[in-house]
Length: 244
Ligand SMILES: Nc1nc2c(ncn2[C@@H]2O[C@H](COP(=O)(O)OP(=O)(O)OP(=O)(O)O)[C@@H](O)[C@H]2O)c(=O)[nH]1
Ligand SMILES: [Mg+2]
Image 1 (tube, helix red, strand yellow):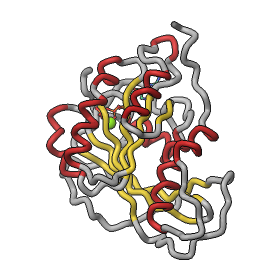
Image 2 (spheres, rainbow, N blue to C red):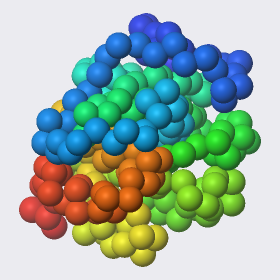
Image 3 (cartoon, helix red, strand yellow):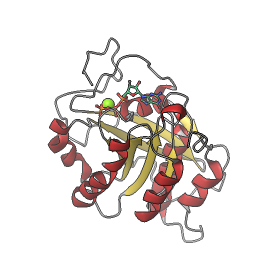
Image 4 (cartoon, helix red, strand yellow):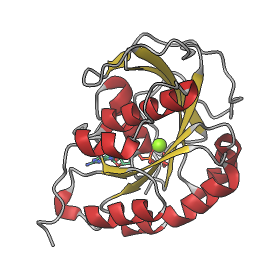
């Protein structure tokens, strides 16, 4: 797809200078709240800790759109502006009355930026791996992405598989159960999302935040957080099978 200059900057933090992965926090005050689950505040959680989260997947699957939807609650339709280099956005997600700071890195899916992306895997605490439900190629490439992730990321990184563009059901090339099966094979949580309508976008980041928070505190009296169960209970089902 042709790369075009965006008329509107997507994020003030975007850069092509490949910044260090340890920038000052500079958190903005936008917050996301999770009103469903309220448990007592875990006293040992360090709210200053910044969890680095990275978005990866083929060019055009909707990584930037997903981040913009989560950050600003909007979808910018129109021509596709491929990400150049890498950029980040800071968000605070409130889960279980605790503020979880996420620094979300949006990578460029284009092959020519791959070596840049590799450098960011190492410091990632969480990784959202996207494919486009209308693109079989992007789905087939997930195995290659996971191979890269296992090669470059920390072994304990939280991984989630997302089938994006769930609103485009008439162009669907990958059934939801195919995504579920692949996720099961790699033992990672899965959901379909739409950066356009916002379906499951907040849930994806909330689930990751909960998992990161639970891993960080290791509260002895708290049962282990079950991310799969949480997602199953919370996610909005997206139409899948009626076109087959
Ligand atoms: N209908 C629909 N279109 C989407 C969705 N997400 C992204 N798009 C469109 O798909 C195209 C690519 O989206 P981007 O978010 O720029 O893709 P990307 O993964 O960031 O691509 P790179 O930056 O090149 O890696 C754009 O035209 C978006 O408007 C979605 O959920 N639904
Ligand atoms: Mg992008």
